[in-house]
Length: 207
Ligand SMILES: *[C@@H]1O[C@H](CO)[C@@H](O)[C@H](O)[C@H]1NC(C)=O
Image 1 (cartoon, rainbow, N blue to C red):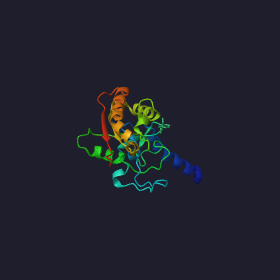
Image 2: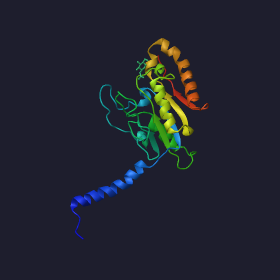
Image 3: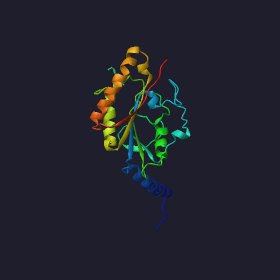
Image 4: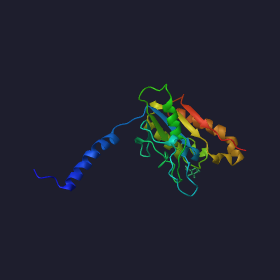
């Protein structure tokens, strides 16, 4: 038999290398514990991103990827989670690192998790939006629900909501906030048919 030409060998090598990788990426990897990440830039992540500039690309250890942390992509596929976690979701903004990855690492450190647990993060945040943009029927609300359902409502452990500053500028928005937040929680629980859905909220104190 004639020795294979180098180009053919390279092609074969590429084929063998690509085989298992493609198989892995295409396999149905589904996380066991799903968390919805919603809110504004504080959730979307601006760590290392300067306004009007670029992300510096630095990923601190607490934001590093882990084989046990997946994210739901903009196209509703599970993939390995990595910063910027909200890429393709928090559109039109300069994205950096945020609280999602450290949260996942903290969950995975718990010694009470069933063996083999994997965390699935569902980024939904959109920077600079008032909570009025998240009421039932709005684009952001519908996008969040679509993504939550695609992730599998049976696996959702909690929705994390990190308030943004947009509602801290005008007094009337600040005063309306609690009622709007309550309405959103009520609607999400109803629309996902999860009456006991845990919602973890970070509020922002203002001077
Ligand atoms: C927020 O709401 C305003 C007013 O309805 C709308 O014009 C704007 O497009 C919304 N923004 C987003 C990001 O949904």
